Image (cartoon, rainbow, N blue to C red; front, top):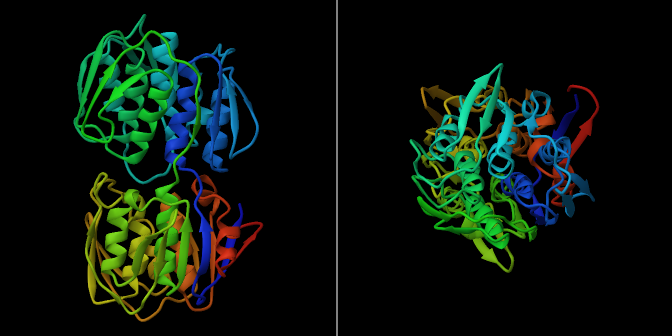
Length: 419
């Protein structure tokens, strides 16, 4: 496994291009299975999770040509309706093939999902919703087995907001007979993007981006040509890094309206955040102010930015409280930050952060995708050299991170083998 060597202390300056949204691209690639024909997807990020999804749709018989950012997907020859453990264990989003396979082909066999070890993320809401649509569901030997001659529209009430569950059931319901109403839906921009794609394919989806979605089922869909929205979750770490290093960075191809909660907290900490052209500019202005933050479903502060914002609070004057309400095991970066001189105490679902004058370079280890981004930011602001192990997590979710940081003046080198 590779590692990063980071030399800190340099303010980031310049322009960085934000890639297409991974969390939008993954379900959209699965959407291709809903309609026979040739699909074109543009602004697709080059990431390991995208490669895993491509392997998955190829396993089912689809043909995928090209390389990100432009992919051509032909679904005329799909002849397998299973998602094997070997692929699903790498990425829990693989479970998103369940809805499309069941809706179009009437059957699916999908391994129970894997992914980052950040806490329990069951798919019970997915299965409950599919059963409401008339599917017969069994779990055998670690696989979900689903069958239905044709799904039927129904009212689905989520017990909690779930992005994956909302997406899976949207993709299932578009080919169901009759009307489906989904209540307590996730409201993320990626949900709106999925609805946009489905409607371009001939579906009738209304209300995406609110907590209530109405879907009128249709008999069939047509292929689509679509460019994916910018990645707000990639943009967030660059915003935090620009602020923390005292830099001045323009994030091109970035939508501030998708990042309002993040921008508000970074500004509250003392940085300047503003829309500029087709992007967002962030100017860091230390010393920073301590401020509390609580993660919430969109449009609240995203759990995927909790770790990165904590780095900024590690350098802020005073005491702040970071509360995690989405995942119960998302403080695994805290011991690593403390190795770098941070003063953070975990108290159940909250972390009390007492600001320190500086962080120091150390040997640290990535535990999950978003914690990895936090440790890169910590390395960029720390005195001396930071050696970051298990960076394969970063490859799953951040495109060309070394090249992008180098373009901003950051010193990050990839080396073979563990640090």
